[in-house]
Image 1: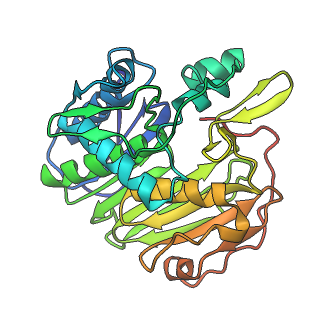
Image 2: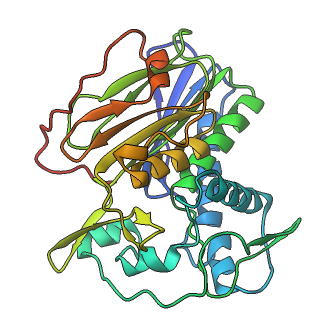
Length: 330
């Protein structure tokens, strides 16, 4: 288990924890909570990773994929993950599809990203399947059945849902406020360290200046981008965002999409859907409770009408200045 680094923040009764989980840097802020909550957050996220990782053979997700076509018992956590993934598939009209495991492995993402970054990707041919999508996933009270021939990959929704679960459990355990940031999938609940709400930076991997600073009293922000988790196969750059319509890495004109929503799992899947849909339809799935910004491959910034409510009167820069030579990874 990765050790937790606990840092006393300048604000009174605030503790921060930073550690590594789910292939991402995790940052947890706990306001006015009892002792031990930082270690609890670390242990709980590691537990969720052990249940949901497709790279750990003993995980429940790996068991579901090995037993595709047959019911497999799962924990309440994993049942909730499957329920949310099916809901996300319907919410996005299939733009988020957790049954694309074969396609993402074929693109070269067939082991943890740290290993890919060290060794380079290994492409292969996608095996023919009868159908994709979540329509035939069966969810019982304590068991789930993945259709034979399909593989389930929780992808980013796992990080978003983990942020939601842990933030809620920290509040239930006595914290006054909590922020759980799972590598860019972020959920805030309750009081911030300064009592004035939470300020969240939306970053671009190739810029040292945030694209935007958004203010939240509660809710979530998630960012999806093709500029991280990249590797090269035969001189061709590949990435992990698979377009279900092609079973190939996205060729959308967008490089980054961020969404503000009530929960991190919703923000995550809406951000991915916005990026895959491209600039012409990036905001089509938003309702009055969501807001979004997108950045195209040239750095041009666009935002939905609702984003202004979170910017505190500050106007967005119309373009992102690229000042980093090496794309950020992770």
